[in-house]
Image (tube, rainbow, N blue to C red):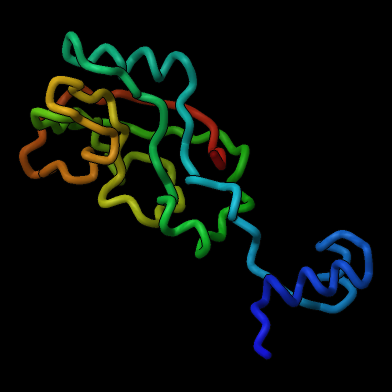
Length: 163
């Protein structure tokens, strides 16, 4: 019978009836973190940054302007960002890209804090979606950033969180 690391860890925890960190320390084991309850890791914008970015939403569109995804839902199991969680960060938007479904602010990688990115097609913040075109936030990953329009730099701040 083959056991996964998670199954082995659960068996050890049950046998010792102690916390996972204590088992790891006693046995010198390194297990990947349990990410089952995490949908994605993101820089969640503060209220001022949200308001700044929301002002770019076309009338009648559903505003998001909530976060920049750092680690996509499909990539959570490979993450190694524990030291970043809870840390403040600043990003700079210098372009806006849009189509008939979605509008997003493109993050200027050279001016931004170095952040762990794993999964997003390009660093961006979804500003809004067009309900009439059945736009969804994930459509921002499909935008053609070569067709984006430059804007005056928008400095955004927030906290890195697991959601």
